[in-house]
Image (cartoon, rainbow, N blue to C red):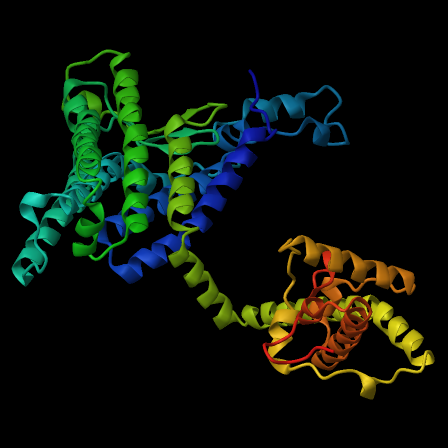
Length: 485
């Protein structure tokens, strides 16, 4: 007799982690849709959250063979004095081992899960059908209703409730008719419903999800065609529906992707059950046994991965948008996290400001050196000509030197040569722009002094009115009627 292994399947840990993560990530989109009263999306996201949480719970409860079939006796306990020497005690323990010994068989929990899973087979495609139908009506130019009446709103809600809630409830009731055993208990995947392979099970259980998916696929095709047809008038149509292009396209893409995954999944489930053949339905034969069917399945069922993928898509489309970020900021403000964020921003701003101030002080050393050299030559600040403050904005602008004439270029080179012959360092435009207003005014007076000396030596009056300091990014322009000398 092969005893069940107690080792945990590695992908059981991965599947449980992804299922729990998806469950938590879908909670903010659900809260946002509840605030907006989007009935169909509330139901869709709630189903995905519920199913992924149940998948996480199943992977935690039944991650190994022993957790499903029972934990066998440990031989090491009989090798340490608990044996009669001939191994009879261990042999008796193995003979008395029963399936399900020392483990939870899913009674109660799996009974509920089996009905919920059967309902989800029709709940997900029916909810997507309503979503895609409502989106296609937004672009229906033949039936635009800007202000629906209360009666129209009630009829619309009644239709949505009938499709979203009534069909899954009927599936849950019909399942008991073709339910041959209590439930299946798989490793990793956990609880799963059972159905007697008959024509009646085909009609009641497996065909409705496929038909609902095909109808939803029709509305998805109609929606995409209308988007292409009215692509030039979409802004006006969406404005009439009081929505934006981003808010409209996100559910469109999500709905199309989900229905594109559900239709093949429903077809796969139908094909898998047809593979065993269709038997004649007999009530007494179907309900003759009422037991738990344990199955060692080392892989995860395909529909479980579809749930995880749907949850991740919901988060990508509704958990990262501007509306979701505003919701996160609101939560952070209520929890007091935003105060720490603001403090971190202020500290970062203070560090940047101090770094900028230190760079400005370093860049102004050449100006202090120039002032010290000219002070020793006998010139004073009072001897410098006055420069109007109206030229400050022009002087502080980082300009690129342009060649107006050959005379101007020649004067420009003479100024640069005069600076070089005096042993002065050129001023950095970054330090000039970033310095304080008093330092800027002082530097302007010094530059004006240089331009005056050059004008006296060359006799060129134009150079004294319009002086540019070459490639150093500083310009000094005299006003009309003001002598820069």
